[in-house]
Length: 525
Image (cartoon, rainbow, N blue to C red; front, side, top):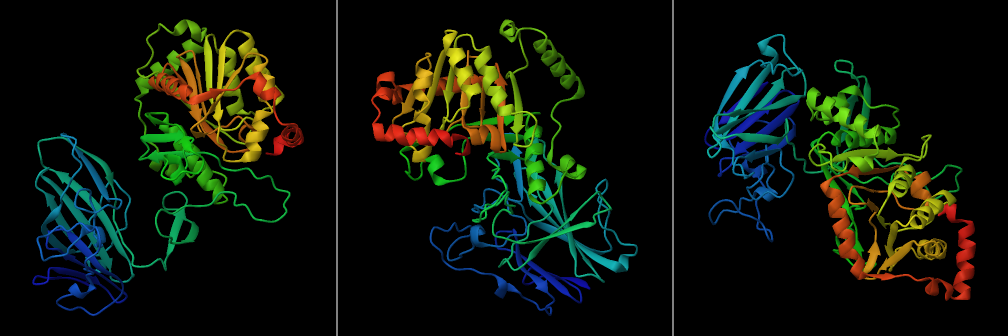
């Protein structure tokens, strides 16, 4: 076991009888990982492991004729602002708003044993002869901040443990938004990722998964092309959570047509909402629950809840918020419009699943329809309704409430489009107004009512979303997002064509026959 620093080549070599870890200080002062694997013999220079070649559209960070590019270099601890466009190991926000950082080599220390990193749990040694540790200090001159990378190699095990420490010396405030214990780049994917689940010091559930390129994911309820008695309960949720502090949800999936990079069904109209604060915790728990269900587990380990959730409200603020909500329950919400509520209004995330006792997504929609006094504006890509939803829409319009539904004019699924049109006449007769978005396809799922309440989420107005899918959404009250959703509706309506009863009555008899047959199997579509 040894840790050697070769001054001339500026290479570090950590090795024992089974494993070697090699890195070097690059020309720009940053650290490059050269090798990690089976033990190799020590030598003065390992620069032959460095891969350097001219590539198209590469960013070069040293003067010519050098070709050093951070984008194609296996960095020890990649950061933002040095020409590397991959996910960084650290993100730091400075007072002036900049997130560009440049940690360069400032020194190192090699010593026997391993220091504690209290109060965090960590591996330890009972004698200094059991391990050797390298601490490399990198410094950012602009922020006056040290980054200390610690590497410990053990005499008896093919293991290298790492931790990272930041020491801020500057006068200006910085915010450490993201920091990883380590960053490791592999040349191939011939590895397994081992996960130890369970309470701390009792990690007995060992899960092995093949390492894949990019972000690791787990498929949910895979469809197998065979006859089956199992119901296809899709995970239709769209949730993006960032560091437990910010969440995005809505209709947008990860595909090029959702951002109009490609044109499949004309212009793709979609919506999403960004949420910050205590409500993010609900979405985090929704995601973790699905993640563990997909792995065949019934519950979320307590340590994962603590790891991925962030407590935003102090206890006093939480008590005030609960008191306000209780007051709103005990009074007609219509009379609280002039009351000064918590900044930004209220948002309540909710999840819906096919195994629960209540159809929460459907209840939210019906509640908005029943509470409306002036208007309800709706965007939905599909319209396949049950009697209860038809009654709620009709009753809303019959009370004199402006009830508007915006639908696609260019369909993504022709059968769903034809089926949706069979409901038009039933609604138009009672005063519901229906518009079709002529530039293309509407994929948004939005309800807005009376400038004060609304919801954005993943739930379509069809049987599958309301009864069979795993879904999610956000109910909002007196929030700025409600007003923005209304403005979006108003900007969309001029691009739509209103559907009339005359149009419904003039449908081709052959088309009407097909639509009548489709109504018989509507709950299955």
